[in-house]
Image (cartoon, rainbow, N blue to C red):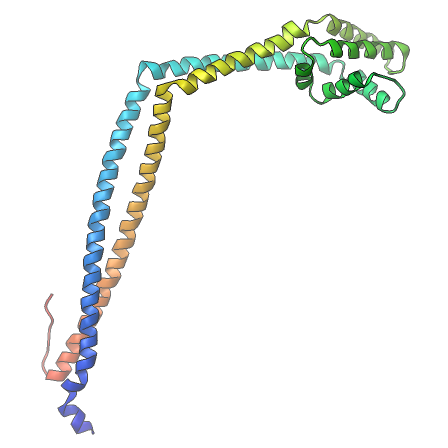
Amino acid sequence: MQKLFEENKAVFSQASLQKRLDSVAELEKALAAAEAAKTGLESKLEELGLEASRAKTDLQNVRGSPEFKSIDSLNEKKAGLLREKQAAKTEILDMFSKIEKPLHRLDKAVNARKIFLPEKQASFLHQVLLNPFRALKLDPKAETLKAVFVETRKAIESGLVELKDREKEKKLNVLQELLSFDFFGDAFWNFNRFDSELLAIEKKLNDLPALKKESFLLDLLKQVENSKSEAIQGLSANKLGTEKIQASVLELKADIQKILSDATGKIVVLKG
């Protein structure tokens, strides 16, 4: 048997040899496909680089235009209005904070049915304590608000809302100031003016072609950068895959050389 195998080992090795040759052919096709994919990715990366360069130049031109420079002026005006609005808001809150204590005590007394207030006033009193600005929007001329202040003053004077003598005098003075305060002109109308002017600025900003163009170019740049990142990752994966295939080809060729050498009894070296 051993002698028979030795005499015919070339025949016995043929199937194994053919299998490896077929594998090498398939792997070389895969290498060619990987090389073509690499060329495509490199070409795409180059195109994306040019597209990014053009978009950056366009963005620079847009941001340097007179129209775009007007955006800074509008934003400064907007910031100024927001500061004014906040200052006015703080002033109103400070005014309400000075009578918050008696208002809370009046609300508590109303809920405990120790003091009667018409339903509209009782509900409004609660709204004022939750959010003075929302309450003012519901009562632009402050008619209900001042009616609540009058009831608060009565409750303090009658002792139904208890305060120390010195504190009582201070709160009554503050209430008198608030009763004479022009909430419509100095609060409601003022805040409406702020909101109206801010809305007009926002509309101008949103309608500016330069701002829309900037937004478009920024989105485009983001998309291009994402595509570049994907292409770079693709090239990295392609390189790893190619190296793996090349290693397999070298391994198969080494096996083929060994099979041929064993079969012929001579040293066989494959070229390429």
